[in-house]
Length: 149
Image (cartoon, rainbow, N blue to C red; front, side, top):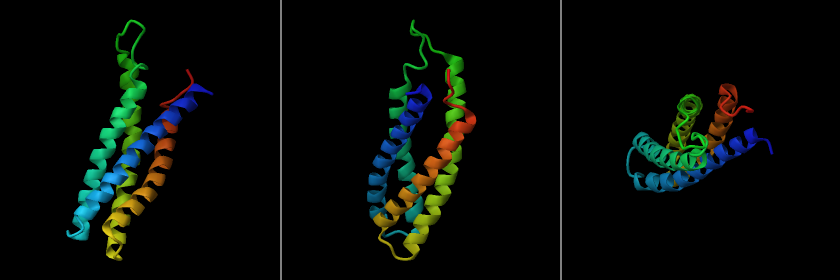
């Protein structure tokens, strides 16, 4: 399989595993904050979601890519690391803006029409994750993070 496609698969695997962790913890948080106003529940749940997602994704991304940025002698490939960090942060940033808007609005709406807090969190996160993956993969392709070497 082409190396570029392996990189895409690894990135998406890490994102999906991070979302699996965050969807579970977010649903628990949403249920915990269910006695709060809907806008506060939505905001606090989103904060928990981000904390869990970025912690998990960061660890997984590091574990998968730690050898990529080292030479055979163990020295850091600073220019490659800097270039890739700019591309991944740009791609994640664009995806996160879209994700945040879609998730917040959708969870707030579901709470307004009397969904249980945990269910509103799960549904909004699942839909937002699909949108996020589409935007992120398009952004990674546009920034050429994974180009043929």
